[in-house]
Length: 154
Image (cartoon, rainbow, N blue to C red):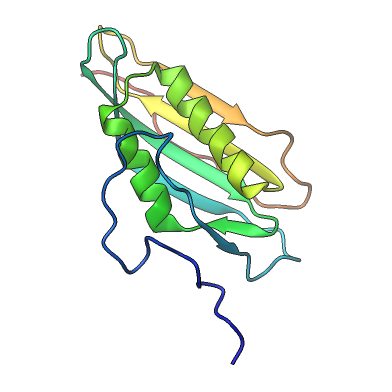
């Protein structure tokens, strides 16, 4: 029997403690079962949290990650644990959003990746941060992220 593509995963199906920092977090990947196809994978994290590096106050965001895989897919439990590692991590919105995008590009080498960080306001001003690794591949349907901008009470 040939080896499973899931051999070597250390977090899926096992107890996995929350990483203490994004740098410590292990992002795991599995082979793309459709390497010849161009398609989009989307992850949405509507309850992302991190800390302000100056005040230590919590910051909240709705993250949308879209990517067109090449040889690798990110294993979703490892992604959840990686994102959870930001809960006690102090960094500005831009550092979190762009850092997550760059780390995924480094680990997966996708054809294309984008991340939208839709941050909830603190101090009366929401900050939205967007990053993408380049031009989207031709011929791939990439749906809009459609996260409504913050409107306040009105």
